[in-house]
Amino acid sequence: MKSMNPALLKAVVLSVQTLIIVSMVTFAIETLPGLSRQTRVWLFRFEVFSVAVFTIEYLVRFWTAENRVRFVFSFFGMVDLLAILPFYLSLGVDLRSIRAFRLLRLFRILKLGRYSAAVRRLHTAVLIAREELVLYLAATAIVIFLAATGIYYFERDRQPEAFASVFHSLWWAVVTLTTVGYGDTYPVTVGGRIFTLFVLMAGLGVVSVPAGLVSSALARARQLELEEPESNAMSTE
Image (cartoon, rainbow, N blue to C red):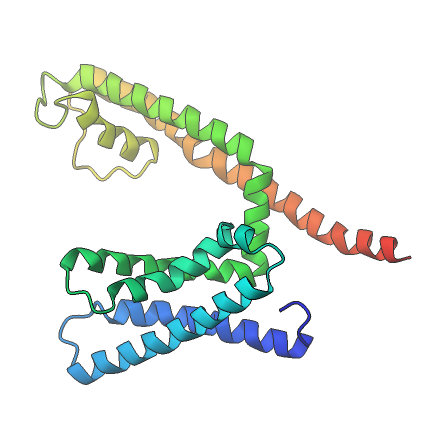
């Protein structure tokens, strides 16, 4: 596809992007109650059309790939496959459990990453900061477990149903550390409230740290993106 005429390639990219977005909209429309039979027929026809286009795209990419096995098991190769697989799995099958495969249609939105420079830049940023992000996720998991354990010992006697075990307390820990605070479970003891204060202070770091990591990595990804054309120009000279 890279050897295609630039104007034609741009038109194809925009068309596929539009088709992906419209496909997501029709997926949401299908969940509306009380749709007429005619509307469902048209939605199904559009689904057939979109699957046909995505299937052709997948086959073209597979046929033109330098390493077909590598393409099939690559990230975007798997996304392209998952974008069309649910349709073929549900054909002629009336089992209710198979309907869960329709949720895989949501993977189509990931196809936008293939055509969006911003999404590709985000992917590069994640690769740049992956070690820091893994370290952050590990530290966050430890903090969540410690928060759940602490609140369990403070509140288990006063609220045996809400904080019946450390596992029951994990929901409170996640909600509190992310500073969401639904209010469905909350401490009533003095010790529990003081402990919650420290958990909330730690939660501010839980929210802000990944944002800083990703933003700095995005800046680095953007810099690499700008440096790449310059290096290509120098190599041609």
